[in-house]
Length: 168
Image 1 (cartoon, rainbow, N blue to C red):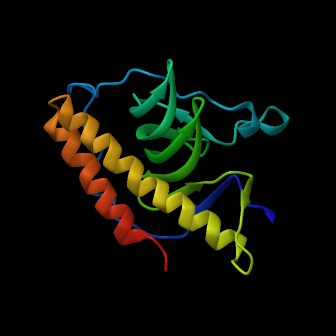
Image 2: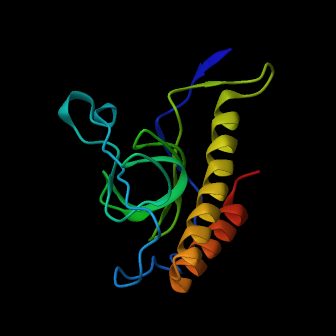
């Protein structure tokens, strides 16, 4: 059955602002595809979503992010962090933004197929975290393959942080 989940829900999980994202002077990952800003995140002309501020480290289709990966972003609240998760046709679809100053922000599809008897919000959260774990692992592997050990290690630590921070 179809259920609606919030596009963006701020998780009320405090996390330390420890490991910051790697400096832009490091070698890039093997991909150079793009993440788009979706007009759906700007209702009534007001920006309410995210803005990519770095490069996508993940799968691509053509020149657009498509599949698992990670990218530094700035939220509409002005917070910077890193999105890890799944993109489709250049749009961040399902995952978690690890906010640098602490906390997480979930990005989930408007509608998801929810198994009978499962809470739709819990289902969307679980899906977002699972995509985030896999996206961080994908980014880590791509940076490692490109010879960028610092970024590879950052995304491996991000994956561990997301796993430790997932609500039960």
